[in-house]
Image 1 (tube, rainbow, N blue to C red):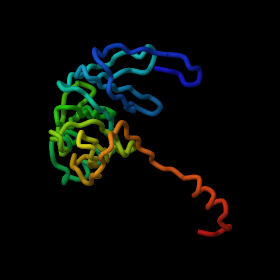
Image 2 (cartoon, one colour):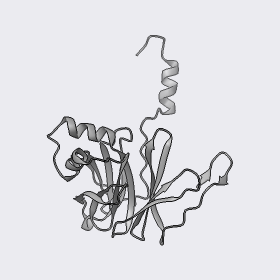
Image 3 (tube, one colour):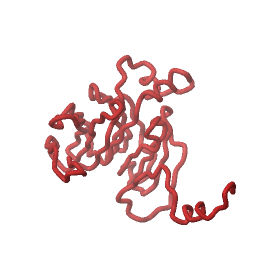
Length: 208
């Protein structure tokens, strides 16, 4: 773990037994995050970033982890309570769990499943069979709505993108037809291209 201002190493976390394939942050509360890492040792680790970056919990997932993702639970819990139409193992758990964690961990790998994990006890709370081809193997998973956690995307070995809605835990859209090797996917929530900035600067006052 590196401090970008000082370029100093502030923490070394060594509890994985094989290469780390994915990592993300889970918000515990305002300005307080935990680090979640997944590896090909079939383990997901949750780390406390305060102090000495200690290990909070190790979760055995019994497959090579290719991607990990976290989603906040507050808004999803509210949706499940207000709308009883949301059904399924994930929505039922969100509605009934007494001690809800600040975030939920999702994992994907070579087992052909998208699975949700409770970071407080390390138990799987829901799973969904992969809709991807190529035996359902999955490469990456990312949250598309980091504030509310209602949308995510999976990328499979078939090089297709599947967009999911939560708490339904269902595919609502997809992008297919890509043949290039997908190394990484990054969400850019909002961007203004240089040409657009120039057009805005040249526009007359009061214009559209």
